[in-house]
Amino acid sequence: MATEQTLSMIKPDAVARNLLGRVTARTEGIGLQVVAARMLRMDRTRAEQFYAVHQQRSFFEELVKFMASGPILAQVLEGDEAIQRYRELMGATFPCDAEEGTLRGDFREHKDVDPLYNIVHGSDSLENARVEIEFFFSPAEIHSRSD
Ligand code: IDP
Ligand code: MG
Image 1: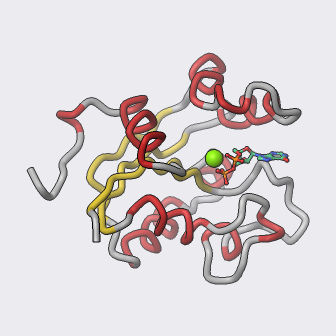
Image 2: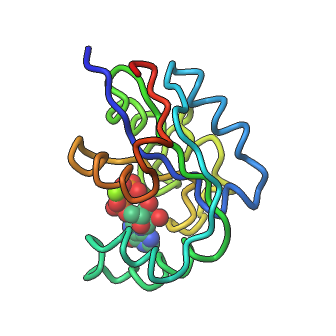
């Protein structure tokens, strides 16, 4: 199996609900290691840049507003097949579709919660993981086990 790094964000909804530790424990529980972490608040411009691929989507404005509404915890996660395995742990984009055993399923507030408020972000490809990790972290801030 290939060791990979992926970018996780614990989103403002989960930070406000005091879920940082519980979400991170689940991540560690599947054998992914936090090799970089920073709590920060994105301003509108940064949130627009991060989600630029969604610029044309109807929910873009709301998404940017939400992601800039409070602090997030950005983390680099490292482990075997980290990108795919973290996506599986996250569950479906819409919390109402996310299964039990996933972060978005187990930590959603209620069944019909707004799809914006889905707890976590995880990179969806090797290329996006590279770009997203660079968006938040310099190489010196990443403490890879292979270093
Ligand atoms: P992902 O986070 O599962 O990769 P994306 O399609 O990349 O999902 O969408 C980015 C984020 O935009 C989602 O995590 C969610 O917060 C929000 N989002 C996606 N689709 C919708 C929608 O139809 N309505 C409202 N928000 C959405
Ligand atoms: Mg995505």
